[in-house]
Length: 76
Image (cartoon, rainbow, N blue to C red):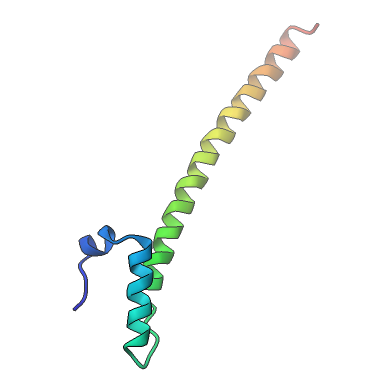
């Protein structure tokens, strides 16, 4: 029986890996459904971390820009 999206979202990564391993053992063909779900989760986590890094880099760029403007406007 296929899981609903809600059921899949409630599974941990380890549970998805175990279900994939069981599906491979119980069938003659390789079904990569659980691997695709795991890959989607990995991509979501990766995208979130990249977005956080982008915010940090933007803030750092603004600080450097402000420091440069102050340095040019008020030379020592």
